[in-house]
Length: 425
Ligand code: MN
Image 1 (cartoon, helix red, strand yellow):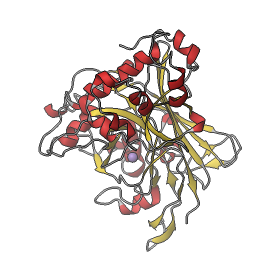
Image 2 (image 1 turned 90 degrees about the vertical axis):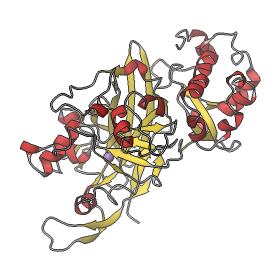
Image 3 (image 1 turned 60 degrees about the vertical axis):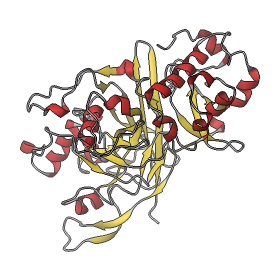
Image 4 (image 1 turned 180 degrees about the vertical axis):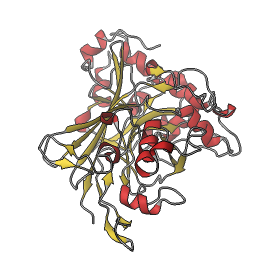
């Protein structure tokens, strides 16, 4: 589908082989500069490409996609066009950038001058207007770790866990783009030896390593999306950090689930990598025969993805320390099953809705996706490069998630999502 001959391209749009953004990626995002209002863009190497400029130059004219969708401050209207249109735009971009001097873009220096920007010179904005946000709990290793720590190692998974993708409705208003810092949340907590709850800044500040998927094509209220149809509705993916205040969460969550311990902030990476770009990294899923899943959750084909994930802590003014290496493949329930379950009762989805995977933990302690698990409830502090230790996150710590797929010499990445914990206000 995507031409592999990038040699000519590299002479006029340089990028390195290990970039997360080769010509095969073509992710979508929203940027602005001091001269340009927010609009759609893609990225190759460290070059951000203004899609409104390309549209106004007529490069998408034959695709019957209105120019207006490129002038939006969010991807929602573009994504809602559906895969047929958005893939046509993506394929047109692939040909524009993969062909040699015959491309109408490679020979047009004036257009390149107005449409190309260095990533360091633009501001990347929140790419989607998130209407609804749902967080799942679909990594078996993570759910087993939590069950082992807080309940019973013999019965770590609750009775429903292997029968359905457990999830909850999260808060959309506080989803922020990478680089947005936030203040340590305050709230109610119940210390272990106390007789009454206390109020104050949370002490057990944590992150959650997750991937988010964004809905493109909407569904109608009262109808369901099957596992077969799910990929038509999933526009693409991003890195997702579901910041968590563990002490607030522990006291409040019974019986209705997470509330203020989660809703103060969740951070996403600015580039939405399309499902099509990730096709190369599909892998088969786990056996789901013990117990056997219900028919509406059965699926065919490879629905998991081999995406390498890494978590790093950077103390104020210090260097980064890698604290975990995980993989998006550590999921028991895949995205298609999650979306089928989400809509099986007739609940509709809209363009821009965000669904997050749940914390992605692998089978070994080096691959756990939260401080809670990495420090095992604070009993095993992590050592950073500067010699300091962490059980949970401290004020002024920056937490970084990175992720990419790599296979047969092709690397397709998400870039990163960062956020810094500021002191409580
Ligand atoms: Mn979560």
